[in-house]
Image (cartoon, rainbow, N blue to C red; front, side):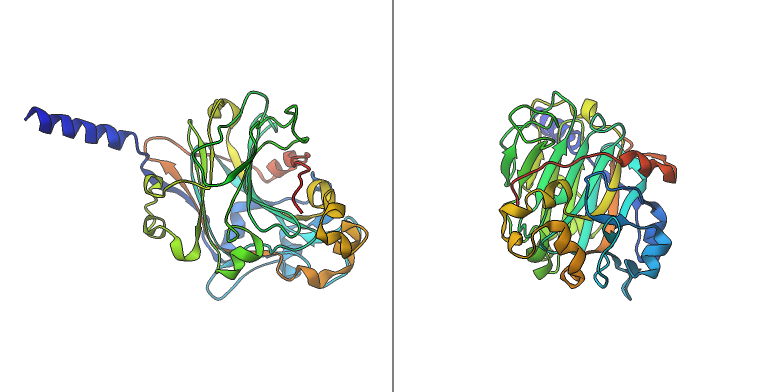
Length: 344
């Protein structure tokens, strides 16, 4: 009897230690998807060669759409020679913000490994960098693996353990000594299917990001290996195995990450893709990144997102969902947020 009682108690403790997630926001599909975002139209905070357009312009120019299956398309102008501040593109910021929870993105296609491009799927808090930033999908030019990064204020470092990726930098502070400006703490995926052309060749997959008071973890699942609990709508990270990235160590997560907006964007050149242009294979295409992006619209036919679904789950018993913010919220995101890294 005592043994049975002990086992029951241990089982109860195990259940308490495992988050049970319930759906907080389903961003839906079809054109209704866009009703849950603001369209950022300011100058690119990363100094990219880009013109971010509003929803009406994006729709009339074919930069956003939905297909017969209601998958959502977000792309760039790949028809016209660019002018003015740069190639037309779209940057979306979620109206809702989130604290803790599980963000699950199912993509059929992401921007390809194309010279001059710099796509990202990320989250950001207020008063950057004090509110933190989580880069879930990011890369430049002909990059073949995903770069996952946190950007914070001072006092946050991570351990080199608990993930399958490769640690590139361990100090999340944007002005950390001994690291490139705004490098943050970075973990690079080791899977050639995790980003760009390799991702698209397999029909895409799922990125799942779990944010708790103790850690931030990111998993990537190729199309043929998506856990059944994700597809059934009952996600359980405890059964997903070792994540691609685990940000945990000497860092008080809750003091460095406040309520986050979700962001999709595609920019060009700028503080990362542009600054490494001369050191990579892209340099043979044009003397500068801006010149190439301006004069080669057809190069960017694969520079688009196709979103099957985006869902945010909250821990049952705590709240991931925060206030609905006004459309003007996106104006506060005008800041330099990226590192100058050695990626091609």
